Structure formats: structure tokens, C-alpha cells
Image (cartoon, rainbow, N blue to C red; front, side, top):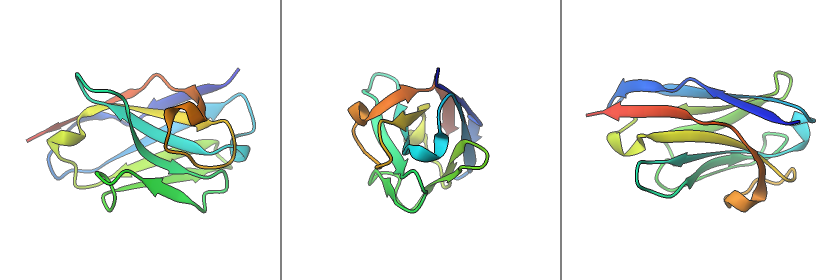
Length: 124
């Protein structure tokens, strides 16, 4: 059974940084791409960032490009999302997800497993 557990969320001020972590268990972590999505109040869940199984290929939503960095440590079965220059529009529940294959993806249906989410709140 695959488990994904996010951590690192919290309440920060505009301009601050946070690093989210996603600890995975249950199947070969290094064989699958990982992604981060977020859902703001009253909005649909949206793609944020993705990384291939080996960590060499990444992709980002335009809204976070240049501010967020996705990474992974396959030895620790953990994915990360470094978020810099946060602004109130980044306020959301952030979810990590494990893809169905090694290929990174931007669509939610490309992901088989999801974490419970971690709240990020950015005050102005």
C-alpha cells in the first residue's frame, strides 16, 4: 500500500520561503515521477510542479516558475518543493502525488496516489 505524507506547511508572510516534504512508502520510489498540486479555497486543484523518476526532468506551472523548485532524494524516498517569494495567491492546501509511470506529468489523471495535503497560508 502506497503512502504519501506531506509536511512543512504553515503560516508565513509574503516574501517568505517554505520547503514542503513528501515522504513516500509502499513501492519503488525511484521508479515513479512525482508531482505537487494545490487547491485554494473555492477553486479546483491545480498543477504546481513535477519531476521525473530520476530527477533530471522537471516542469512547473507558469504561476510558480522561477519561484518554486521541485526536487527528490531517491535514497530517502522523499520529494521536496522549495517555495520562495511566497505571496497570498499561493495560499492553498498542497498535495504531493506519485505518478503511474516514470514520466513527469501535469495532469491529475497521470497520478495514481495522493497524500492528504499540507496547508500553506501566506499573509500579506
